[in-house]
Structures are given as structure tokens and as C-alpha cells.
Image (cartoon, rainbow, N blue to C red; front, side, top):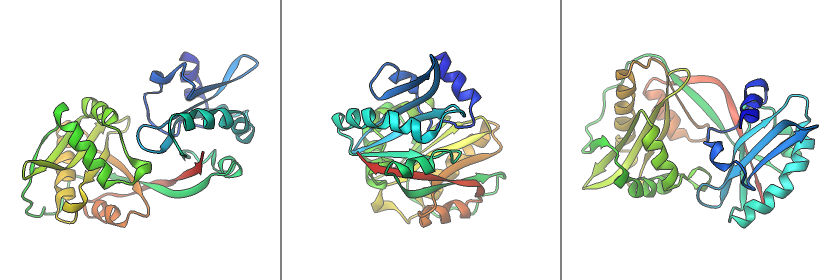
Length: 265
């Protein structure tokens, strides 16, 4: 574990995803690459839910060619993931160090994620929305997972277990109720730079009625109340409705987009 942490801290080829990778140490989905006894690469891929496995941790020493590394780790990983029911492997190329090597191994870029930043506390007037917002409880997670699955396509689904972990660790995790049922939720967390909206979802039937704006506004207010100044979030560049929502709420594009790559297993 210490060797992997050192590798993460010392290389310019960073992890592609935020995940509690320590839970998977010793499993077949977590491959450690050694060079003369020295850890030079680590790759964890895990199908949280549905048919897609994400590269949850991918880090490589700067003196190891990415293509040669993928030659070594992808074959055994594909076998393991197929046994777990995964049919697609997805990878976020944070730092743009793996993209060319991934494409050489049959991956294609499916989308790009853009980062958005809000630096002020101004909010537009909110629409009148008949919904009750409250802090989520453990008993809500099954309904939250239902909303999550309805609102997102399979590459982006989260399992009930992951959502419950998010709820426990979040600075705020709110659900919106209408007619006694969960119809949306938002999660916000502290980060190294300030705050991060890690998830925002509204059930398709209730989209376009201002629930997303209401949830986001409440989450921002909660983070600001904790003394957080800057808040970031990520969304797909192709998701025009989400981009319009965030721009209306005062977010601006920050940094460079991150490519998302996929390949069949």
C-alpha cells in the first residue's frame, strides 16, 4: 500500500479515478507491475454496477512506456472482468498520458468531461418548485439508486453500495421528494481545493421543472455555510442541458477537458 501511495505521489501519470482502491488489494482486478522488484504501475478496474467496468486507479512511473505496460496488464484483466459480468472497460485519461496507448489497444474516445468552477455566491432566482428537500438517510438509498439508474446511461451508473458510501462521506447529500417519492438527489463534498458537486440527478419524468436548479442551489448554500469558497463539478461536454444549467448557476469552464475511452472486453 505504501509503495502505491509513493507511486501516486511521485509520477506525473496520475490516477484516472477517485476510488477506495485499498479495498481491492490482493484481488485479481488489481494488478501491480514490478520492475526489478520496484512497483512501477498499478491498475484497478471494477464493475461497480451494470455491464461497465471503470479503471478506478491507473498510475504508471514516468520511465515505463504506457503501451508496453498495457500489453502486460490488459489481457489478464479482461479475463477477470468478463468473469465478473463486465462487457466494457472505460477509462478517464486524466493528464492525457494514456490516450494514445489506449487507442493502440482498441479503445475509442466516447466522450469528454469538462470541469466547471463557481467562485462567487451569486445565484439566479429559483423557480417555484413543489418539492421537499431534506438530508438523505440510509433508508433512502434504494430509491436514490433507482433515480440514478433512470437519469444516467450505463457507463455512469452507481451501485447502491457506492451511493451509501457517498452519503456517509459527503459534506451534504440531499434528496428531493414529490408525492412522497425520491425524484432527485445531489451530493457535495469537501476537496483539496474547496468543494465539489460529485453527483446531481433528477428522474426523467421530473426533469425540466427546476428541480436540478433547486437541488444545486441548496447544495451550494450548504457548502458555503461550511466556509467553502470555490466549488467545482464535472459533466460531459455533450450534455447540453447540464451545461446550460451550470452556466445559468454561475459556473465557468475551468482547465482542459478529460477524454473518456472505452473498449469491449
